[in-house]
Length: 405
Image: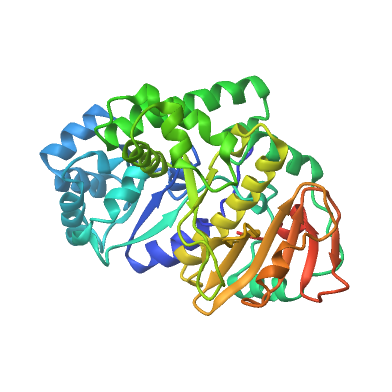
């Protein structure tokens, strides 16, 4: 299987490890966290997994003894995988860091639980840098050069009006198998079907069980099966209540837990200074785009995930504080996505499979916000500027995302 270089690799070194901070890597199951963490290890460095009984026993007895032994016989770099499954992990990790941070580089990896528990990790404040590790971006999939934040801003203000040639087969495979590294690299339909089934079962039967007290996991599996058909639209919880025959609060709770284990993510409407905008109804998208059968919603989910990954990248690396929203007013006019910074909207995006005639919906919001607008299409080799509006473009997804982190 070929090796993929992740965009975060040099940044984890320069921003966390070089500054004597622990690197926390959290993200969906099987998105490549452990592989990324191990890529920092030399032959004499050590990898520990909480699921290994011998390590669990030794760490429970004395974390400092484990570390001292590692420093005696190996070079000073360790990966602690799923260490947050230990109830006392925060205080134990604080003690290890405070004693050995001058001698030791520590990378901690975990799924949703690490991100959830990190929020209450007051004892670790100032001791770590947190990075979101998500499925591959298109740029990572084709191993392209990544934009910095300033380069991205220059690009959206003036994209090159010549479409670039990019590996069309890689794009098609990405769209078919999704951005999780293993199925993307194998590109085998049978393997992909088995992998997908196992991942969903593990998310619900193991990760959700560990994270919550939910007993009716079979019903949660049914709820999860409903979501791929509802991608890209404001989600009606009441409809799910009627389908599942459970209470409103129960469905809300289950949706929250599914989000905590990285089954889906939610994008909220942008309401600041937008006339008659919606303020609460979120749109739901999946981390595994290959679960969505309909091509249009799958492409919109692809665009959503690429933008989410970009937003996390710029936030995690300290380049900018940016957010991802969508635009929708009470008259049901909508623009799929808007990326904002502290000054307001940076750019808006409408996802279209094949339609290169510019959707007029975004014009409704022009009186409230003014920024470049991109209609991103799946069709390749499209890049044109609107004659009517100099800051409006129709652009192929391959060109729009080819350098986005």
